[in-house]
Length: 252
Length: 223
Image 1 (cartoon, chains in turn orange, blue):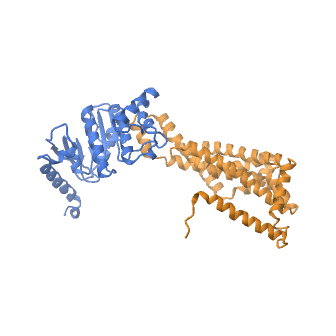
Image 2: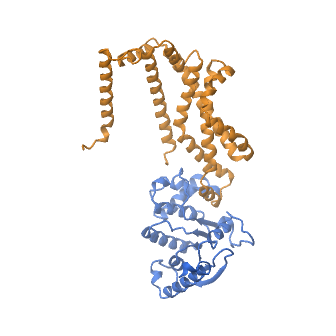
C-alpha cells in the first residue's frame, strides 16, 4: 500500500470532490438526471450567485443570525444560572431536574408551533426555540459538572487555606467554563437548528423561511444553494468557537 | 516520623483529621502547631490544571494574604530550589509525573510549614524519579527544620526517612502498637541509610510485627 502524506489530505479530498461534481454536472447535461430533483451543480451555483447578486439574501441571513445568536447567548446564560443554582440548592434541583430531563428527552423542536402562537411569527419565537434547545444542554453540562467537580482540587484549595470564595474562583468557575466551552460547538449547532426550524414553521424572513419557500415552489436548486449556505455559515461559526475554545482551554 | 500499618488501619484518616478535612470520631487532635503551619501532600498531586506551575505554587501564598506579584516571585524561588527553573509557565498537563510532584512540593513548602503531612506522596512515581525526589525532600526538610508525618506502605521508605516509626494495628479501632526509634544519624542520605548497620535488624523486626498485625485479621495473608 502507498503511504499517504497527511499534509496533502485536503488536496486529495478536493480532487475527489471536484471529480464527483464534474460527474454530476456531466450526468445532468447528458439528461441522465431530472433537474427537478437533482439540479446541476452549475445551477445550484448560479442560484447562490443570484441570492447574493441582488442582495436579497442579506435580510434573511441577518434574521437567522440574530435568532441563533440571541438564543445561543440567552441559552448559555440561563443554562449556567439554572445549573449553578440547582447544583447549590437541593430544593431547586428537585424541582428543575425532572422538568429539564423531560425537556431533554423530547425533541424540543416540537415546541416551535407553540412559540409561534405565543410570540408571533417574528424574531421572538425563533430566539425562543434556539434558546430552549441551548439552555437545556447547558443546564445539564453545568449541573452535572458542578456535582462532579474534582474533590481532590477542592481539598487542595482548603488545605492551602482557601475560603469559599477561593473555591468558587479557582475551582468551580474554571471547571464550569471548561465544560461550557467543551459544549460550545454543540450549542452553536443547536442554536442554528432552533432558528432555522422556527423559520421553517412560520416566518417572513430567514434562511429557514427561504428553504420552505423553495420547497413550496419546487425549486431544488435554491434549496440546495441554501443548504450549502447554512453549512458554510455554521462551519465559520464552528471555527470561531473552536478558536475560542483553544485559546481559553490552552492549559488542556 | 512515619506511620505504617495494614490497609484500613486509618493512616490516611489520621492525616485528614490533623489537617481538618475530616472530623475525628472521638477525641482531639493536637498537632502542637497552628493549622496554618501545617502542609499536606497527597499521593496525587491535585494541581489546578488551568493554572501554570508558578501560579499553582503561589496559590497558598495569595490565600494567606500575599500580594500576587510577590507570591509569584516566591513561587519562582521554590520552583528553582526544586530544580524546576524554566518550567514555571508550563501547565500541569505539560509536566511529567515527577515534575508535577515537585510543583506540589513547592506549593506546600512555599507556605513555610512547620509540619508537613505526607500521605504516600511518592507511591505513584517510578523508582528512579522517586529516589531523586525523596533525596531532595530530605535535604530541604532537614535544612528548613520541618517536621514530617509520613504515611506509607513502604517499610524501607519509612525507616530510611524517619527518626521514629509508629506501627498502627489492624483496623477497625486501630491504635499505635509499637514505636521504633531509628538511630541513623542526620543529615541523612536516604539511599545510604539503607546500608546503615541498624537498618536491616529494624526492618526485619518491623516487617515481622506488621505481618503479625495483618495476620490477626487475615491468617491466610500472613502465611
